[in-house]
Image 1 (cartoon, rainbow, N blue to C red):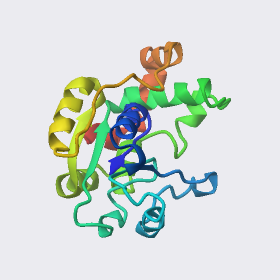
Image 2 (image 1 turned 90 degrees about the horizontal axis):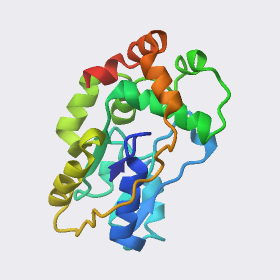
Image 3 (image 1 turned 120 degrees about the vertical axis):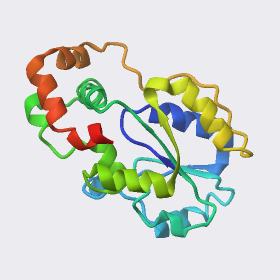
Length: 204
């Protein structure tokens, strides 16, 4: 089960899973009405298995290790990718502006629930680094790093044996223009805000 955290290389990993497992790959999409609680439940996955009866892996923004998904099967193993938090957050804002049409100024957006500590939130369900670390230790079998992506994929392939993971890839959702992110990371005021709202992710 792939825990897909925004702007950590997840779309590329998702492509790798799709090319490796075909119809055995189930990507969970939760509707916009679930934005306030984007957590897939075991009951939902059990219903999906009627369609994906060859299911080998799950992915999607609703897949989280703090849910009840581990009740589906004793063989279920979680994995995820992390990224340096300040850069991840700046990249997320850039993506929302360029691809999502976000008009909200950065100094307003960065204070919303969609901005800071998204890695600890996804792993633990709350912005708590200690809780996230405990869950990584006890429930997540593999953690890759976007900054060491190719090396992480080789280690992921070994970890996922004997499932036959095909780690060849073309990068997905990579911005061709990083000017917004660069501006945020080089401006002292915005950089300070990015660090302030990502304290738990920085600890993680």
